[in-house]
Length: 459
Ligand SMILES: *Cc1c(COP(=O)(O)O)cnc(C)c1O
Image 1 (cartoon, rainbow, N blue to C red):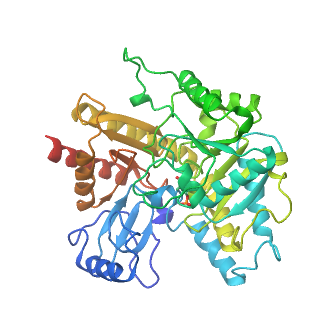
Image 2: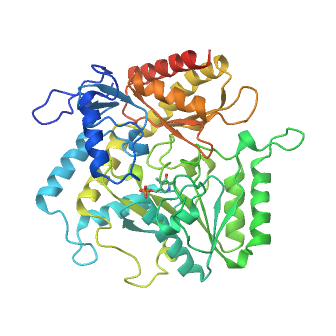
Image 3: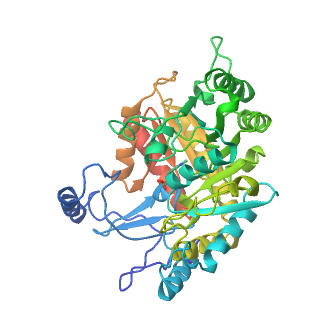
């Protein structure tokens, strides 16, 4: 299907075929050797999900130093939506890197930065006038969205949600919900961050077992905000339209629109953190589109540049322009090579209809995982959108998290050559984020591996 990716190869090495291949145990001996060097040379705080060392990657395949080829259901954490070696990204990066690698956009600018800003302004929801600023990482984009919202409103407070993940810098650690591993021992954290209750359909039952509607979940959050923060003190609400690290939590329909409406009535800047959901991942270019909401500001990163470090804050021109000249920026923000990659990503999404492809992946996975959910009662919930799908593992018939089974299934999948990621506040969510250019054959083979792993572990 994705023949353009089948020839991605290491210079001088064999072609990267789109097939799973196990020639050693996972990890193999050369990976084990490298991991020992890693342990001796790299800080212990930087740890690995699966320590196989990669030499080539593309389409839906990761090849390691031992010659194993793994199926990739992680995409470098929702980054390589276009694949790890998309031809249009590779060629544009090669061209740019040979012309110049850096000048600093704040010193002597270049056109690529403007082209990326124009593209994002055009592609993000809403037909109002927009402006964009570029940065290096998701956390940096979120920090800058908060800076801009505070400056534009003259207010301090920021509301975030239970299960939120916004990054690892000091301000974004304060905004992130989960203690381990993100925050433990790293305080004190930035002030004026307030946490509101999220809409989490699996866990939002009232005493009678009735699900809380999206609108009612929003009212619960708004009531907390009004009582504990005060609307007139609030600069911004920052929320992921589908929570990523929190466990792919999809809020009940109506939750986001109700919050947007309330923010508008109260002069609060509504910031959608689309760092993980953006750039075709959910079967739309941005997840906000599914709820027809138009955020005031949006943060994007991960999927934007095929793995080169790039991030952006985009939004209403009058809010973005509230900040004085020199108030935003950074040495590397909007690096020319990263901008070339982003333009390659955007061209690839359009040329290969990756929005349609994400929707197709969502349908295929949902159908197969629905069958598995019927077979294995430990699968307590199946949720997500497009190529951002997860299953939450619980003790059968309850909502009690089962992190041990989750870890065991992930381990079995890894051993069989399928990279899956575990996430969620309770460590009991298996999330699937394949590159959007993966073939149906690899998707189905990956799902077969999962099915067998569940059968072996829970039956
Ligand atoms: C990954 C992520 C971030 C942080 O991005 P980095 O590039 O790792 O700093 C912020 N918000 C969301 C929703 C994310 O998924």
